Every structure is written in structure tokens, then in C-alpha cells.
Length: 493
Image 1 (cartoon, helix red, strand yellow):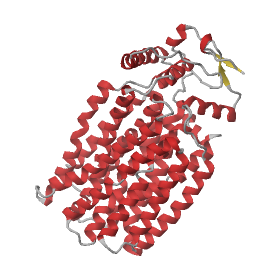
Image 2 (spheres, rainbow, N blue to C red; image 1 turned 120 degrees about the vertical axis):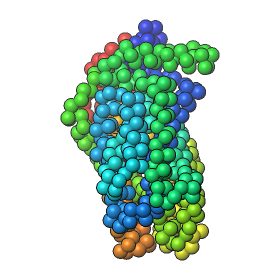
Image 3 (cartoon, rainbow, N blue to C red; image 1 turned 90 degrees about the vertical axis):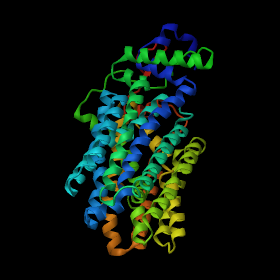
């Protein structure tokens, strides 16, 4: 088939049609503008990771101050994850309806306010409710950066940039133990946890940077009927990139094999169900199941490692230091995972990292020395936290643009937050008290291996394909494809 480039009139280069917007976005090179987008949303993840990690770090102090039982510890550890589960699917749909940027800002404000209120808790019940409600804000902030990056950057670098986002999360998780090392020795133990929560809420000021510098996704704008705004935003981006590169951008090429719908999706109840309909249903289930093993191990590490060290009669300051070492292990994992994902593919790299995390879990469950606990604990987070870039970009790419955030939020909320964050965060201290560390970890590893097999078999590879090409595959599976004619208008094949 002859190229369409010569057939595209110059006005199409400034067209607000969804197909033309997609073609214009696809030709954008990776420049420092791309890096700016990634670092802007990465900053929001740092703020969120700090907030999430506060409870696990301060838990050894908190459980003594409030005289918590294992049952109450499990409830508290699961509370914010439960809020994420309840809030993530609605947040994803709201993002698909009202935009990525507004949900990112609103979510960050919400969970930071919840952390500040936690510092004022008069009792356990109030703290439990506030942590649960803060999870509603975390839900929006978790998924937006990946939607934004998947819609702004080329398929050639999406997973590498996802690795940077995950590294930002890893850096954010380093802050709570550092904060603990600073605050706990200087503040009376009775109020240390209050000061800790209050200090963790301060970085919410970062939302001004997001509001000021982050543009809305032109792809999303064009797909919800805001074509003129999409054209205006994208025109500014194109002009900026041309100034950066010092040369004009190449003409956009409208690919007739790519199915693009310019109609607004609307906010209807059935939109929540699209991820459970053909061809998405089997993939949604497999992606949810596939994240069970690594998500469970990640949550157990973030929530309970400091307490496990304290239970081994290790001083609190040393427990913070060991936690810092273990938490830091996920950072090189995330960077390596993101790079390998662009070379080998999402599926294989995620599988390798998942197996590494399970080896670490088995070793941690049978470790007899502090050094072995630190080594195997580091392996857990290297694999479970480090494996996230490929997986998160994998399930972001699987879903088409109109339901991308909804699909992401469905997988994230059920597979990660419900299974790992709620169920196992609650069960772990109870099972640990009854069966011991080694038996509990064997169960987690066995279930993790089964979940990995399911996702590897069912979900197809997505790397090195544009989001529009992937959508075209879905259109072939479900309906008569709609293609883009050379004029830029849609025509039935």
C-alpha cells in the first residue's frame, strides 16, 4: 500500500480530529519535553509513596502507643488499601470522563489531607477511618501517571519511562524510614507518631507544580469531544519540541490500519463494565490474578518489615536502617526492569522479576540471621517492586484510550490493592501469630507461582506497538473495523 504522507493536506497537521491528533502525537520524538512530563508525574508518585509508607514505618511505635492487638494491626495496615480498592475504579472512570490532570491533583490533595488528619486522631477508630478515606485519594494518584505517560510518549520508550515512574515510587518509599530516623529519637514517644504523620503531609505543596506545568493529554481531549482544546494543547507542544530540536517535525501519517473513534465515551454505567466484556474480560481476569504474588509480597514488606525486625529484638533505630536498605533494593530493580522491558518485552521481564521475588520470600521465611533477613528481604523488593514498570505499562497498553484508566484502575484495585493490600495485609499478622513465618511465606509463594502462570499464558505481548495499533487489534476482535481514510475522516471498511 502506498504511503499516505503525500496525500495528507497541510491543514490536517493542525486538525482536531482524534485520528489526526493520534498521528501528530505518534510522530513526536523523545526530547527533554518528554522527560519533563515523566518527572512531573513522578514527583506526584514520590509524594504518594511517602504517604503510603508512613504507617508501616511508624507501626512499631503506634502499636505500643495505642496498645494494638494483631487483629487491629491487620485492620489498620489494610485500611488505606481498602480505600484504594473502593476508590480506584470510580477514579479511573472519572479520569476517563473529566481528565487525567484534574484527577491527579484532586487525589493528591485528598490523601495528603487524610495524612494530616491522622496526626490528630483521638483514638484507634478515628485513625482507622481516616486512613481508609485517604486511600480514596491514593487511588487516583496511583494510576494517573501511567495513563499520562502511555498517552504522551512513544511506544519505543514507554516502559523505560515507566521504570522512572516506579523509581520515583521507590525513592518515595525511602523517605518514611529516613523520616523515622530523624523524628523518633527527637520527639517524645507518646507523640512521635503524630509528628511523623504531620511531617509526611507537607509535600502536598507539590501539587502547585503539577497544576502549573503539566498539560492535559491531547489524545484524551480529542477522544472526549474536546478537539479544539486538544489541537491547541498539541500545537503548543509541537512548537516547543521544534524549538528544542531546532528543526520542523515530520508530517503526520494517518495509518488506515488504525481504528480511531472520535466520539465522546460519556459517563454511563455500562462503561464500567467494558473491561469485563469481550475481548477484555479474559485479559482483565488474568491481569488481576497475575499481580497477586508480587503485590502481596510488596505490601507485606512495606507494611511489616520494621515490625518483624522489632519482634526479633532488634533496636528500633536499627530496624529503620535495615528497612531502608531493603526498601532501597527496589530502585535498581525498577530501573533495570524498565530498560529490559523495551528490549525483551513486558511479559518475559515481569515473569523473571516475579520469580526473583518469590525466591526472596522463601528465603526470608526461613532466614535465621539478621543478615539473611536483610538479604532475602532486599530480594523480595528487588523483584516485587522492581517488576512493576513492565507490568503497569503492560496493562496500560492492553486497554484502548476511552477505557484505559478504567482498565488500569480495575486491575490495580482488585489485583494489587484488594488481594495484596487488604486481604493479605490483614491476614498476615494473624497467620504469622498462628503458623509462623516459614509456613506463611510458603503459602504466599505457592499462590504467587500459580498466578504468574495464568497471566503469562493468557495476556498477549504489547511492547513496541502504539496505543492506536493495539486498539486496532481489539477492533478486529470485536466489530467491523473503522479505518481512517487519507482525508482524515472515518470510513467503514
